Amino acid sequence: MTPPTPTLLRPEGTADVSRLLTGARAVAGGTDLLVQRRDGLEAPTLVDLTGLASTRPAATRDPGTGELRISAVHPLTDVAAGCAGAFPALSAAIEAFASTTIRNRATIGGNLVTGSPAADTVPALLAADAVVEIVTPDGGRRTVALADFLLGPRRVDLTAGEWVTSVRVPRPSPEGGFRKIGGRRAQAISFLNLAWQWCREPDGRLTDVRLAMGAVAPTVVRLHAAAAALEGRSPTPDVVDAAVAAVDADISPIDDLRASAHYRRRCAAGLLREALLPPSTSGGPDQHVIPTTREKDQ
Image (cartoon, rainbow, N blue to C red; front, side, top):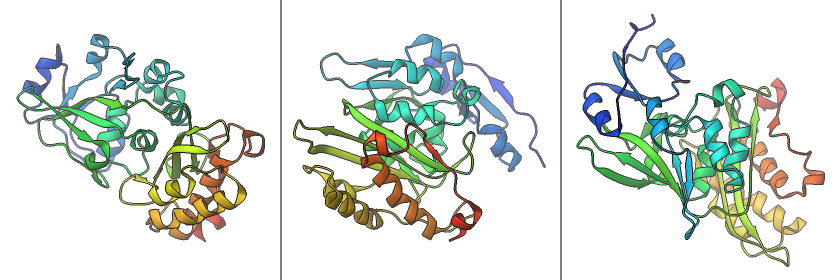
């Protein structure tokens, strides 16, 4: 049975949010709300944060440090425009996210607080060592590393009355990207996804390698072993083989309705190999690979 229609409250400003959140739940884009309500989640009172978007830019960059501060309440379409050219991995993830209609509503904050291991924007943020900025019930602020914010499926480090206001990202690397595997080319939950960023030296060596993958563990995870196999090396066939082999140590996929653990392990290795191939041989900009039913069950 669908829960009763909730009461919707709209704060007049940031300072008003904490007061309204007493006994209520914060929402921004709300694109996942109907799905959760269909599953029986009750939320008698909702605090709509979308009005706060008009009080701040979607993204700002510190001219000195290069750090990005990304709003948690702006639609992903606005975030992509604000980060244009500054965060290639996140831009690619947003481009592959659902559909234009959903991107015009969905937010970074919503993608984070749902705590889904398959969330498409989270791998790029995790790979970049993002920090989550949280407003506490008394109007104060606290920050937590994204790696510590993600606790498990549908679980994050957020207590009653708290809400995510923004995400800070140290200077992202100039080269990065995102690929996902889903059941269709639009509006599909990822079977798994991969975000990467690195610097490429004049001699071809990769440095500051950061890799993160979703839907292969209870939370989105960093691929530390695979990154270590690439760090300071040129992506020659032998180096790529070593990095691909190392992925297996970084992930712990499960069998579920969307794909088997065996299939996810095979695809995890394949996604990293594709990321390391030159664009001319990686199949172009397409971010989606559609498996057959037989492949998913293997």
